[in-house]
Amino acid sequence: MLRLAVVLLLAFMTLPTVVVVAVSFNPTAILSFPPAGLSLRWYANVLTYPQFQRAALNSVLVTGMAVALALPAGTLAALALERGRLRGRHVWAALFLSPLVVPGVAAGLGFLILAAALGLLRSRAVLVAAHVALVLPFVVRSVWVSVRNLDPALERAAASLGATPWRAFRRVTLPLLRPGLFAGLLFAVVVSLNEFVVSLFISNRVTEILPVAMFTYVVNYTDPTIAALSSLFIAATFVVVWLADRYLDLGRVFLRR
Amino acid sequence: MSFRLLPAVAVLAVFAAALAALFRWSLLEFVPGSLQPGGLTLANFRAVLAPQYVGAIRDTVVLSALTTVLTLVCAYPVAYALARTASRRVRSLILVLTLAPFFTGAIVRTYAWVLVLGNTVVTWPVPMLFTERGVLVGLVHFSMPTMILILAAALSHIDPVYERAAASLGASPAHVFRRVTLPLSMPGIVSGGLIVFAWTLSAFPTPELLGGGKVKMIANVVKDLGLDSFNWPGAAAFALLALALTLALLTLVGRLSSDRAA
Image (tube, rainbow over all chains, first blue to last red; front, side, top):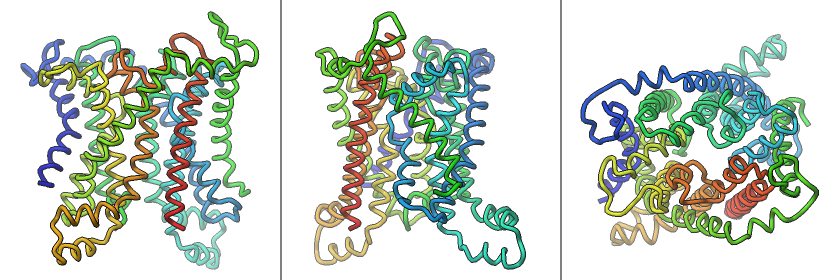
């Protein structure tokens, strides 16, 4: 009984994905399921639609810059949270995680008003600033776990063997933090690439990232182009999640065994 | 304060400035046809409770409550299987299927439901797309990964020995579940329920695309006012309502879990 329920519920979880992938190979603009034939024309459409090309480039730029800023900032914060002589450690931790709990429309509208006041409405800088804040919690949390498992004696050993603090950090601390850094990087990239609500408020046709361009397309057109683009997203995501499960053992990240 | 905190503090300062701008504008008068606001006023907060918006607030609360209950019921069996399976392969399979939609992004997921609910796959006996029923299905699907992970974490803390002890004392499986497993997993149920409820209160893409303009939740009103009518002060007041509701609920989660820890 339980097994049947679990299978049915997992089918419910997976159903939309299956439908999207099936529809993406539909030969006609009128959606049908199962598809009447096989065609790659919507994939061709995705790759040649200029707005998607521009949005994909924006996504890479915004995510790249946001992650490049958030990863060092979050790592240093995680080190300070665990190692620093810090008063109100829990308050700081809560503060760094706080962008997670602010509703997207509140943050988005706030950034829109701020950008307008600063005359930055046409700039990608606002998108980058918002994305840095939104991915920071994931970096801090992932790296913090690794810092907590790090034995300070190893760094003291490096120091006593004559390593400078910078050398000890680079040759001992950073390599030991690698799993946390990798998990933080993974979360940050996935969250930023998929961020939609805040970005909708602070982008225009020139600066918009892929999810915003997809939203505009879905609202205006009904052909399966988005199904093709979604399928590409889903394929990439499955690869990333599968790799993450393989190398990070997601069960250990999310469940205590 | 450690200097190592500085970069992250700078990031948070920008975020705080955005929220401060939101707060300030919620107190400024909206001048129709102009992006320049007028003087200080509380009119935007009075407008939140105007008849044309009360419906959206009520729909938001009702849809969020229904989503929470349905998600709890649907997520529990999956979480139980995830926490209890002995096979690493089954665990990985459930985790990947659970987490993949979590990683796929809101637009892809919601678009997928547009296809499913829009009579592409099956013909529904009742209209689904652009109704509250359809939005509800999308919201439950959206909340499942979070709920499954929270419940599975709670369930994996319960020592199966308790369940075996109850069974060996003659309790039927249903009895074991009702008297042992369910009460012991209550912390997960409460925090998962509150977190999903808080998240759903500010849901945006799901009601926007699956509601097709006919179902409005608080976040859709914020977008309509802010991006379509350029009424930033009015939108700011609504956004602050969503923020206040979320913070109140999450404070409750924190309070409950620290009580348990004490």
